[in-house]
Structure formats: C-alpha cells, structure tokens
Image (cartoon, rainbow, N blue to C red; front, side):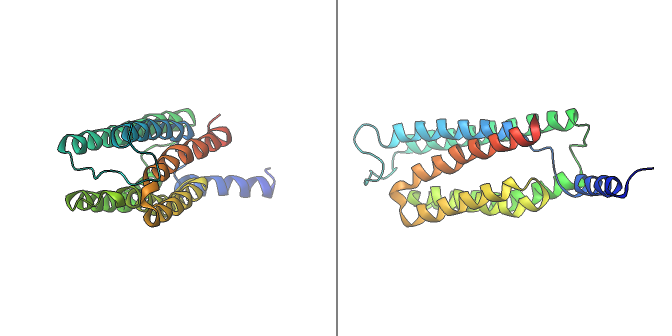
Length: 204
C-alpha cells in the first residue's frame, strides 16, 4: 500500500504534466541568448562603429542596405532561437518520456505567440514609420508580456524572465539611446542566466 503522501505527490505530478509544458529546454535558452548577443554585436558594429558609442546620438538608420541587413540578422537570430528551442525541447520530452505536442504545450505556445506576433506586427509598423528608436523597447515589452502570459503553462522561471524583459523594455522606451544595450541584456544576458538556471534545475 502506498502512503497517502506518496499518492498525493503522484496525483500532483500527473496534474502538473497535464496542465503545464515541462519539456522547455534550459539549454535552448542559453543558445538563444548567445544568438541574440551575437546579433546585437553585429548590429552595434553596423550602426555605431567607429564614430559613436552607446548612449550618444547616432545617425538615423536611413540606408536601405543597412535596414535589410539588420532585418536579415534579426530574422536569423529568431529562426536559430526557435529551431534550437524546438529540437532541444523535443529531445528533452523524449528523454523524460513525455508527450511533446500536448494540450499543455499548445496552450503555452498560444499564450506566448499572441503577444509576440502582435509585437512583431507593431515593430514592422515602426519600421514603416522610420521610428527605429522604439524597436528595442517594443520587442522587449511584447516579448516580456508573452513570457508572463505563457508562464502559467510552463516552468515558473519563465515569469521572472518575462518581468526582466518588461523592465528593460520600459527603461529603453524612456532612454532610447540605450535601446540596443537593453536589447542585448534582455534577449542575450537574461536568456543565458535563466536558461542556465533551468538547465541545472530540470535538464540534468
């Protein structure tokens, strides 16, 4: 006969697996941070080097070639991050004998991507209006809202990651000259920090 405490723990574990997406890979978060940090470094080189530094007024991003190059880097970072998250999270679910595509994972993705998709469309509107100084805060804020929204269906660390993105986005909105720094901190450094925490707590 199982002890009541053991039965309750098993029931709790079953309910958690059915309602929360637990296959999210911490290593994917680390890689996403590395991709973002590399992308931010390339963007800094193209925009600022060698004439200006962070925190000073820079020339408007008016060159069509520069706009295309920055957009290409951003899309590459996004595709690499999504691809790594998909492959590594699927691998984690197989190792732990969990179902990857479940009602919990679908709720998680829906909660995340509605704000992220809205933020992406809003960012294209900013590009259309040549309001580049608000791109960094907009992407950070909408991504942070998506993470906070999706945290109800996955690991608790995701909520704290979302709050961090939100705070950096609001700061960047008031101080747009530091937008690229905030973007690198949010998508780069915070992803590495929280990805490492998740990896050591849940993936090993």
